[in-house]
Amino acid sequence: MATSCGAGSASVPGRRSIAVSAHGGCDAQARALAARLGLPLAQGADASSCDYVIEFTPRGLALRDVRDVRLKPLVVDLSVKPRRVSRRDLLPRAIGRKVLTVVDATAGLGRDALLLAGAGFRVTAIERCPVISALLADALRRAEGTWADAITVVEGDALEVLRVMDPVDAVYLDPMYPPSPKPSALAGKELRMLRDIVGTDADASELLSAARRCARRRVVVKRPLRAPPLAANPLGCHRGKLVRYDVYGPESS
Ligand SMILES: C[S@@+](CC[C@H](N)C(=O)[O-])C[C@H]1O[C@@H](n2cnc3c(N)ncnc32)[C@H](O)[C@@H]1O
Image 1 (cartoon, protein in one colour):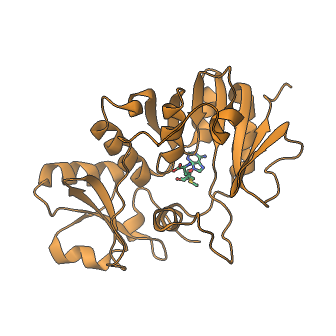
Image 2: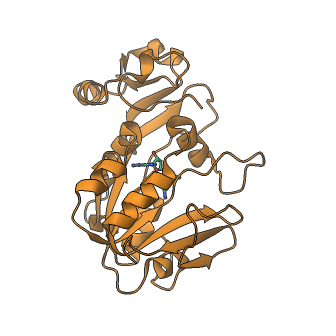
Image 3: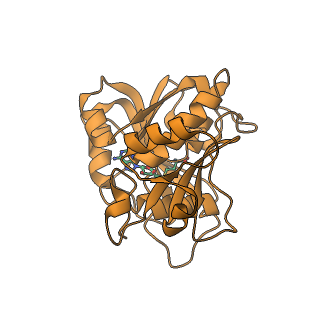
């Protein structure tokens, strides 16, 4: 899939074109964001020639699919604690009881990061797509004073970030699933939009190796129920109805 979400994507043929909308009375902010992301600033009708526009809205920074007006613009919300989350839930159980700090190395829309924060972990959420990372950072600012205070967002490629990071208790990975001929219930509109923007994560196995070098206790990888494991011989596996979490030890174990 030819997609791009970073600097200069608007001028690369065959990739998703994204612009920052100058509409909405936030001119200076829009200009600054466009400059930071290396994206063009779209004035009024200019936006209709792009695939996506990033807009400043009262709900927060929003990513709108220009080609499908029925789709609700994507706004990340980190202010609401996921309902009934506890350390006994599948993902927190997979992460482990003795863990305090977790690096979510594939932050995406921050849902799992929020779930982990809600379960009491301190979370560093790494996202390499600058557009998605900007949505996350905006959501984190708006959620100040909530559970989301336990989350820190880092923009960058986790392969690089983990290489220079001090060891952490656990690393969590949820790489983009390979495209399925039968889209599952999990592939909601927001996830489909995310996939359209970031493409597939072909380097997920490399990321698992980097994660195992950085984690003191364990690495947890989310997989579709019937997909093969990302690497051979996981130490264990926590199965849910739709997904499973494979657990790997640190590299030395
Ligand atoms: C399936 S989504 C994750 C969804 C996320 N768990 C959530 O709850 O919203 C995968 C995300 O990981 C990001 N990603 C993949 N590999 C990465 C890497 N090496 N470094 C940082 N982000 C990465 C992709 O850009 C994408 O946004």
